[in-house]
Length: 584
Image (cartoon, rainbow, N blue to C red; front, side):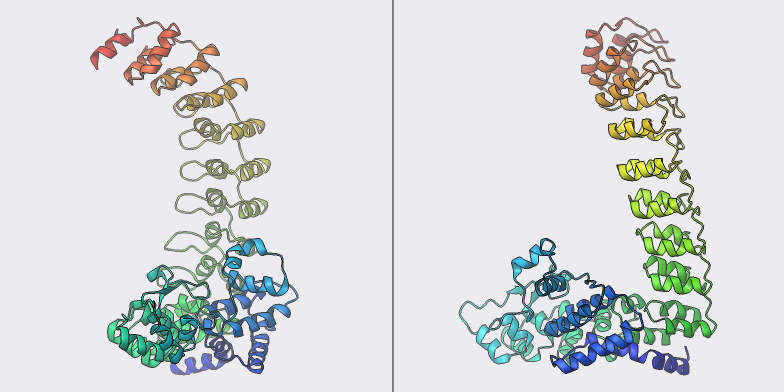
């Protein structure tokens, strides 16, 4: 992007990015100033419908997490937005919902038990505590605490008001808190009196605290990397971002700009790019359609791909960004364009994250529901694999092939059964799923249920016409499948529904042969009770006793002998079971 274009988009986006800068850098408790900020939010973000109701509140809660000294001011803004929202949508923040529940008696106490037990306050920290002294950079009070008897320099804070500190199991040292809040006076005291260690987290948090003196000290001990850039982006201080770019050659991650609503940083990132199509793709990271329009008006390709071969549409589907997806499709994006990296279409991608709303949009624009991924799976097969009922229902009602098979021959019904999802299983059967469909081995869903002892599912499949005597490519019946594992109740169930007890596989083995070689005595007992021939021979003229002896199934050998098996029966080599035993 040339300089003229950069200045054009900066002017275009000025009001938008400035309101976010104000929110993330909030530093006032003055009611009239907060009212003015709310009015700006209302005119720039709410009336223009750039953000959904819940998104507005989520931005407030996220910004407060990185600037919790002004939590009470964020709460004031939160209330203004909530009270003027006719739908009264809450944010995704449990902490803000805790205060909303107390303020408005919403009746969501059970969801917030953990917060009730902590008795959180809007001031974040109680008066006359060392943590309050640090937050306010009250050096006098801080000196009093550190000079008191029993003071512990190694004490740490763990609080829901602060962002998760992955470096230290969400615990903040005193010096890290000084860096977080930009409390330079307390910082100096800890460094001079206790030589407190400047950790990597100190450097990260110093960008949030926005105190240049602390940042400078931290840089003497730690080297910044991309995670420091992340915190600089969160701080919404463009000078810190430029500093890390220029001095340490750290690139801006466009996704971090999206996560933290930093359009100004995103524009700085885009300024470095010569390719109008990549600039367009990056612009989609922030919900500001006028910027998207700008790049299209400057000849950006609506089907542009990033450097990994991912189309703009696919990226936005992957990020679950409804507004950008709609924009792209309205402006002519190919709804069936394939991502080069994953070989998925956008409709396939919706199945992975149960992206229901995105899927509805894609379908309304003619997405090919029967497109398959590299494993031959349609979106329905994938959604069944991940046990996602709602979106599976959408695919089916939109006309997807309910009996499509993946490369292993499995259907959505098979995957629903594998995941033990009875609700999805019944839904698929009600809508035409073939209960007798076979996979690449010739196994039906009934084979799988029988081998796993899924008796309820067997009953359901049989009620939808499943063939109880179906055989796979090896001639194995569902009774063979059940006999291999100790599922006596399953065998009883199958026989009661008409399973052929004397059925043999391609090697002439009965279910008793299978039970014998796997040592499943209870299975063998039931099969014999139901009339199976204890001396039946396979194509190698082996009886069940031969099979049990081959596999050293001692209990099975005793059982078969006690039930009258012919111990002198010979195989095609003239060997009895005794010969087998002697050869071991």
